[in-house]
Image (cartoon, rainbow, N blue to C red; front, side):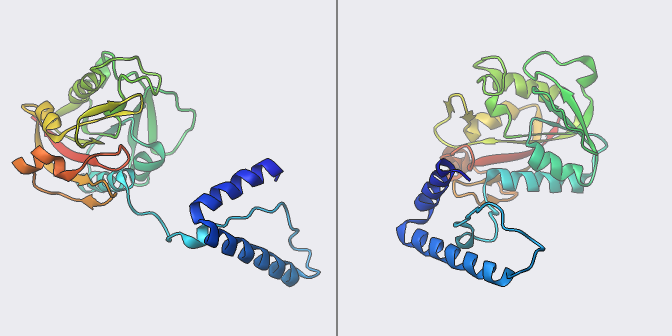
Length: 265
């Protein structure tokens, strides 16, 4: 490990830990290293390679079970398992999150504007610009459809898509076209107040706006949300007050996620 890499690593550790914890962690590292070398003695089972100090992990929790992506991926994967549809298609959700969760127990078709070179059991891939007219074989092609934290990006150019102020509306319309009547749409986006575009990362929607887009097209079966602190509130009722204040959520894009389970009319 060269000096520049070490400097960058230690600088990150310093800012994460603060001075006192950084010094304490580094002294522990030195002490532990000497102890391990002493225990090794004359053994030739392992050699010592490059030093790779990891000073932060002992001060962390055992894991990070919070946040919009964490909760939405697990919640919707569980709902797909419980509902057991004939054909489930996902549009643009996290391959290493939701799609992988679902592929662990069933087949799933995955749609994205970008190419996918990997071949994974239970996952079949369709490359498609979702802001254009869909081919005929994608119309009313499934009884179960998901798109989690995806539509907010459409038309902002981040993923190679064309700039289009109404890109999210095109995406919503195409999701509706794909789903069979009576089918289930699992849909999640960042929400909060004020409704805004944070270019070119994402849009953040208000509940009032989202519910208006669903009027006449879907019936709401379940609504859950993740608040600004990364905590999940599952299957909650939506009151007029909640619509007005977005459950008190401001929305950061990573937390502050509205999760809908919708049945197509």
